[in-house]
Length: 144
Image (cartoon, rainbow, N blue to C red):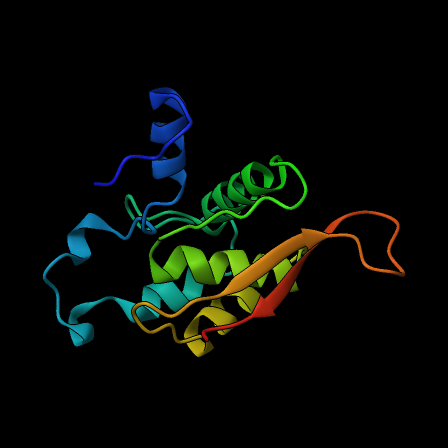
């Protein structure tokens, strides 16, 4: 893994931990699509705190996504941050920029519609627009 320059090991480990892939249920490893208990997942996924076994709940994902956005916004204005991560966490970041108060059914509906291909780039910015009174996140480009 390439080193993250200019930060301590404890900060680096925290960054790597919050940018990791979404935790799926361990019992799903090696299952074929048709073997996953989709009926159970669909029935309960709108409960923000529900989790199947060791799967990350919606609330867990939201907490982690907010930590990521807070970390990004803590850098000085004009900073450029290059992040490599997995599709699920990138989708979560983009959804939370577009819908800051997203609820589970909206989130899961969008995750099924937002396809991400390997090595595509999304560009976000934390700035204050001409008619805004506070800084906010903007999605500048999606999958270019």
